[in-house]
Image (cartoon, rainbow, N blue to C red; front, side, top):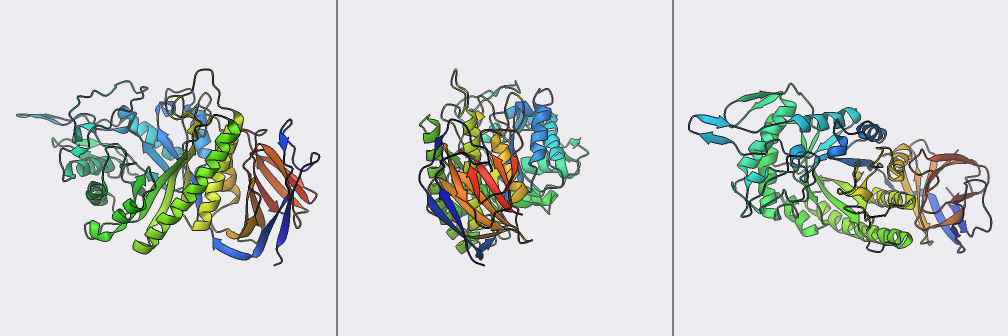
Length: 501
């Protein structure tokens, strides 16, 4: 096919196709974008998905729980990730105290009250898709620590001190593996026998499709790759004894370390037969400048650096273990005034949620070109004290932010099976990528990185549909409009998908 030319021109006046955002700076630099619809680069196998971290706003007594779970249901997708995490010991760890054996007396502390409620809510809200489950936090008492530590018994308390120690009291990892064997038995076998020989009945017979082994272990307990491989081997072996069909995700790296990937994927570093099904790692942009445009600019720059890191890791994976798949299961941004908590008197602006969604859309587009299997936006529920600017929902209501709407729009329009075509763009303001559906429909993903509008001249799209998430739509449904002319306005920070009708 003959390549269509998309002209990006200056806006001298508003365009009737898509409404401009009032009082915003306009773009006065034109450029040309070439989309060669006949030049297919790759058929996408990339699923847009998300992670949900277990935290108090998702508990049954929370006023936002119902809305939060409905928001989760909206973006339910394959490879959705669920992580009970260490700042909430009561929610994340199901054996908080070590077994007590004193003569003939023996007792344990197994308790699935909160774990069951949160996991079952998650599964009921994400039906008919595959799940990556990661009870990432090992019981603190399994680690040697010189500092006495008492975990909070308040389920609403946030405590980032739980992961103590860098050496296991059982260096073989068997104690950890037994913990996970029993945990999985509770969920897939209907129950388990504890350390005292007492049977605990659950009645659960779940299908755990994917299990991720630990989380950001190079940071949590500072686990080197040798110990991680030992734990991975014994944990996967123990889980397969009770759930033989489960596949495994390894690493879950906080940092993009190609040598750690190489050390994990080398089969010589594992027991014979250990499955190396998937690897995973994470990305968060964390700009330090609190000016909205500078935050956005820095975050897109950091996302571009991340693409280079992925390319390096992919080269290692393809060389050592080409059958291993990849999920990037934590992708997010952080507002410097709302990263862990919210600065007094500060409100995260609506523009943030929009351009943050744009960063995710940009990474999704670039990862689709690299053949990454899953890209997970982080995270469903955040709130002050627990990464509020990483949230996909408003913590006061549980309703979607624009970050969630961008994910939903991508899931709606850019599914696996679409073909990505050669797209050239010399305008730094926009990211543009052309897609062709299996039915032959042409689509264009447009991401505006700046707080000014751009006008795209679109020959061949005289009759088209434009779906837009921007500041005016916010956390509401995206705006859908028919383009009756040859041009499409891309509002400030907007994510637009243009579809030929």
